[in-house]
Image (cartoon, rainbow, N blue to C red; front, side, top):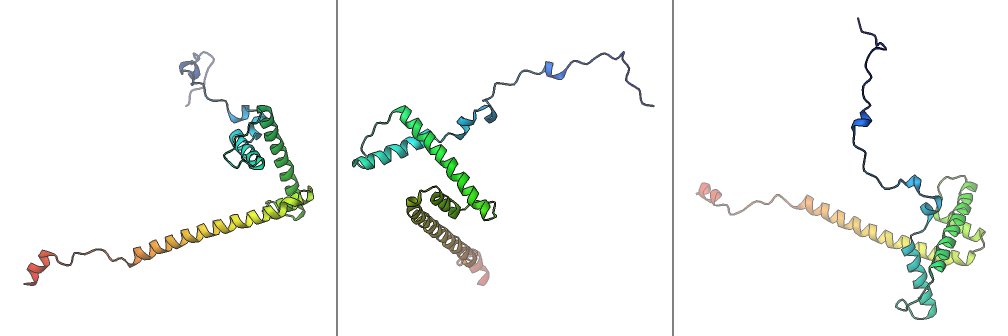
Length: 171
């Protein structure tokens, strides 16, 4: 018969009390504020702003443009808000088409809806160039892969034709 636990049994020490505390870890992503999670990478924003301003100023990419830290924060925040607005509008375009996945056409339609139609054609051209470039890369990779397979299939296992042991047996 199994024994029943009684109140008289001595309590066992808690195992957590015997373990050493775990080393302090970095704060989890959940501990970050929503604004920190949604921030655009500052280095990328800085590079984009400086490159564009230098280009507009006529100095080209090498010209030095000084941008105040607060202005850089304003650029980053403005870009973040624009991205949110554009993605929400593109999502609406997607839902109108009874789809769940946003595609490039939804983004382009959203730009027109937001009255940024002057950007649609340059973006469409840029998107087509990007697709062509990637198609070329894919076709080159496929050609290389096919060539590699062909060589592996065609190459016989190397055999030594003038093996001295064969000469001795043939005599």
